[in-house]
Image 1: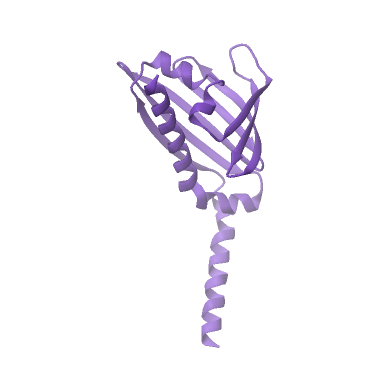
Image 2: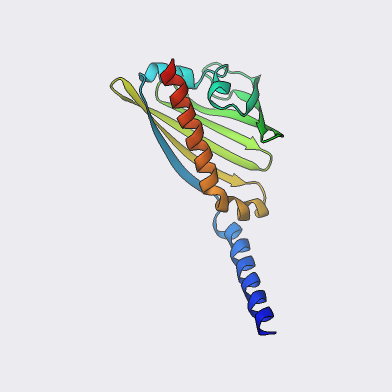
Length: 171
């Protein structure tokens, strides 16, 4: 009987911590940085060429324009990804676009919204890309779950940036 009470107490405590997460953590953030051995103008151009994105993010199966606006800000795209056999469609919107300096993208992906803010800094003949990410769930339960996957999401973004680095440096 004592073991049942201890087990039940542990389960209740973990449940309280889990559900409190959604009350206290409304948004999760992290940064990822990478140095690319190419000049900033080439790096920025290749990074923002939607016809090449599948070369460094192989899960993207299609990226089609919903609306394209002059200067790119406000442009929207429908992105279809194959996530280990599960097809997922998300909407991407360009919030900021300053050539050779900055791109900010907003994603709405089935209950999770994410903002990727990329800054590009010239280091002579190489480029430093700093990615600042903020994401949150559109429901209370998702806000309880998402913070526990922060490391996974950061690892995915690091993988994509490293893949971009490998792709562009081979060109």
